[in-house]
Length: 395
Ligand SMILES: Cc1ncc(C[n+]2csc(CCOP(=O)(O)OP(=O)(O)O)c2C)c(N)n1
Image 1: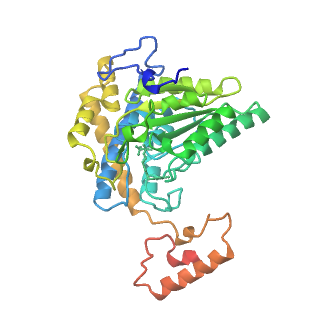
Image 2 (image 1 turned 90 degrees about the vertical axis):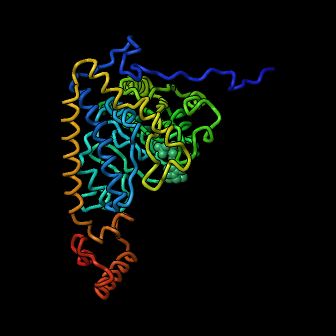
Image 3 (image 1 turned 135 degrees about the horizontal axis):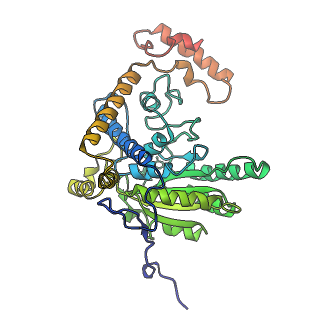
């Protein structure tokens, strides 16, 4: 009799194409599978995420927005994986994947409208900042309860498979579902993987393992070999990848997408290793639970942006001048959209009552009427001038 002991098993390896100096270490793969222009495009998208993050983090500190979450250190996972998807593929996000949205074509204006909850926000200003969504880009709207999107994503993938069974002319599509290693401790993660495996769903689960879930280090989050080892238990093809290596993330995602669509379809699990360089959110001071020096060391040692920059410089397609120019242009664009979005009116107050159900109920109508009466009775208490249509929208 022998008990299998996880400590005696070797850890799952981490796939890598280029090292921290931007040098290619896996020559069996063409690191590019894309033109120089495309690679530069990914680089600029990662820079955009990073510059947007710095500006919006400061804006929150000045009280100009209520909340923000940065993606520092994880730009490569988001942009690299999204670059391997087609526009038809469907995405479910957690919240630290702004690079997925930008790579899919979400504009800075769309981003700012959500962050400032103005009348151009698709969510009509109802959600906290960073809870983006885009019907046009097949990105489901982000919600705060962790991991709830994972079984929903399995269900969506099952629906895509059924669509093709009913009509084989429907284009091949997969679901890409993102979550953190902390969220993977939720029951929903387990329900989702089991459902996707037993129903053979065309889905790629992308776990961002950045070492922390707010103040909880991953050493307190699980005892096994990360999240990847769980995939095998559910009968799911699994790979661990270096999340700071955009080429590796892209290649893994391209292969995962192919696998997911093969034969009767099947789910794939990708665990992308990185480090959460930033505070968890604007509501968190991470130096209360980790040393500042540790963070500084990580920043200096490795980073998805500098890694790709080194590769591009080695190849002779990037230099200091281009870097300065790109940074200045992105910064200017972000600030332009920032000040434009800040000035746009808030959604009509009426929007507060809409979409709870498909139609406004008689009870909600009565509440609208009462709210209008209160606003008009106490105009000094309720300044509604910044809301589109003022109290009239409640008629
Ligand atoms: C169901 C649920 N529990 C707790 C929270 C509070 N919460 C928000 S983010 C977070 C940490 C998530 O960590 P992880 O999934 O590793 O993602 P990361 O923030 O590291 O990107 C927690 C506990 C929540 N939003 N939902």
